[in-house]
Length: 518
Image 1 (tube, helix red, strand yellow):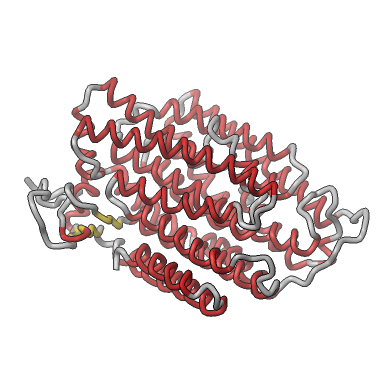
Image 2: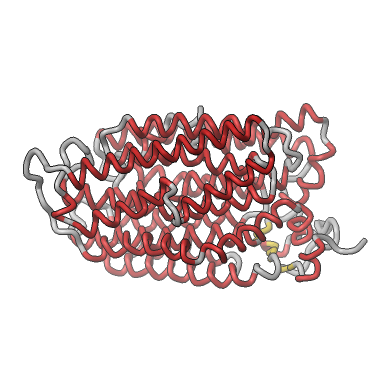
């Protein structure tokens, strides 16, 4: 089952492309593919709660062959990402049906969307640095198409910026892989975890910085985030939603793997902490200054990436657990906010807060759909944003350095300004009276339902907060113990001396102790 979240969308993309002249069939194929992927992900997240899984592709054993690895962290990311992607697909499908696909290149959209899902899943499942690069390129190639759908001047301009920045990041990532392979002779995560520690410290630091720079661009951390607020708002609402919810989190995922598995010593924790602080403050200051709903949400997206990087920089189990929890929280909340922004744009014809107004009386349910995740993003108790931030605050307070307290202060300021920004947007768009009548448009029930499903998912995560935190605690414990991952991939030492059985797993006993007795 391990490769199915990658293979099913890829094969379905081919089928949807071949049947592009039959929109209904293409939609059905896309929805079925992501539904199957979600079912597989749910099974995997249950299975790996007792042991990690490693699959050698083509029976070429690691570290020679490509390995797919599912542990608690990757399974959680996979499940949330596929669930969100499915909700966005339902939203876009309803939008296409309502518009009767006028001006929408359906033959391209559904296959490209499925390829994007496959790339994200591949990035979360891979146990190989070069295959991670392949996953990035798959999702980026798909995103290049999606961000320019419609071919308007603004979309082409913003898409060009996105493409150039992504290519720079990809070149830097590929160069990093080449240098790492030249230095240690492998690209397997498990093998790298054993070999990178033996490098000269200065070379090790250079390689570390190069990887973080490449992933930092993809995650949109300051000062590598200037491209995002100009790129995302012009894309169609479903595209913006899935980009905001997932693409930056793939970069965060790669950063977490880098800091816990490849370079676990915490050498650059201070740098990451300062980057986190700057990302939080600069991003939220940009959000406060915006008078467009999508641009405001894009800046808050940048700002709250800083919370995740903060958790990584703590180099503690509590901090990592809070970071993983915050990633899950942010994927659901940010995606739902962008979907609601799409509903607002469809009803009012714009996302300009100056031109909007009176929406609370016109579409009260959509007003509630915006307000709940908006307050969640700001960290209002007892929602998931509050739970994640409290975890980060506790992890920083446990360390108690001056920089930790500066981060705590920065996080509190960011949360207050986030509340100000989202409430200001709610007041301008929903509460205040519109200066002129807006071109009202009927909102399809399926579009509203898709956005509602993500809001309900976030509420469900709140109600099950204890269980989710328990799961992220266990995931963080695994992340803090690189031998857990290495043992899943290389249970008998170096297995790359030929072929082997295709699937291995760590037993609960091995998981408890981290490694086999030697």
